Image (cartoon, rainbow, N blue to C red; front, side, top):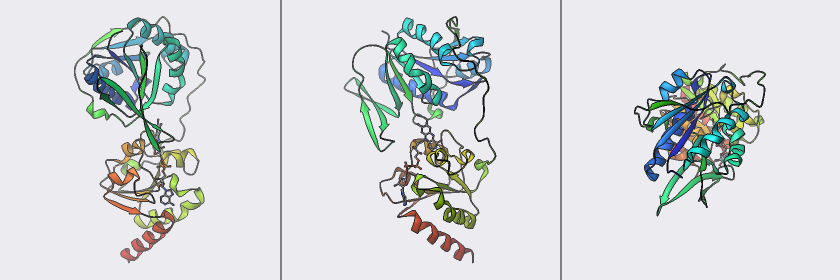
Length: 325
Ligand SMILES: Cc1cc2nc3c(=O)[nH]c(=O)nc-3n(C[C@H](O)[C@H](O)[C@H](O)COP(=O)(O)OP(=O)(O)OC[C@H]3O[C@@H](n4cnc5c(N)ncnc54)[C@H](O)[C@@H]3O)c2cc1C
């Protein structure tokens, strides 16, 4: 088996998923530890400009797999191409960005190529020649360091935001066409529906009041809306708030939501998971309210209020209104 690394990129309609560049950055970092080279793999149809973009990174090559059956993602077509290619080349690692699409097919791919899989990797460390992969467990409350036992290719999916895209080293890579004959779509795509949409553009807001799971229930939103009104702020949210249906999807901030850079960002009952931080780290001044003094959001906050949001928020609203006269 080689010590080379493959990175499988995600795209839709020729547009690279932003996690793909992060995956390249992560693969390059891993190659720095293992001494291997990095090869990118791009699947789809009509990949001209995406392949050109990828070829601008420091990679051994870009394997481009074009086939009409790959125009839309289906697990069968992806596995049909990737499984034989991975078996033939036997890279040490195959890296993916951790997305719903990846989760949809990588388990089956592991089975096909008889590989181990470490999902949601946020970092790795080389301890006396042995690689340990760090990943969150128990909904992010703890982190586990994982060692892969045995021989063979290891599949890794990198959590979004863990390896910044801007750390991916530029270069010039050769494009190589890869055999696409195994691409056999096992599902018929009836249509793609965009959930949410872009009705609210938080990226232009000067002040954002963002709520997290810490508010407990949607009935607790009105005091926060009052604070937002007093501050002239737009309301944003962490993902659990959206997943629970407490606010519409276009309010989500983070790696799978909007990226914001307001002058003032007020984080209320938000723990500060990496996927949230990537969406707001460009904010000018971050103020956080959290009852847990060790919440990671405080690490990126200029001002931190340790306390119960149900008490702090009304007091803050009153103070803002008084200050405004
Ligand atoms: C592929 C992927 C993509 C993701 N994309 C996103 C994304 O775009 N955006 C995003 O936000 N997340 C995203 N996540 C989820 C992310 O990992 C975290 O689970 C999420 O950000 C946590 O949201 P939270 O901080 O609101 O909830 P929690 O982590 O549960 O934190 C709640 C916080 O509220 C505090 N709290 C509780 N009660 C009170 C109180 N009464 N007063 C004060 N504080 C209180 C707690 O101390 C805690 O810190 C993604 C995850 C994955 C795997």
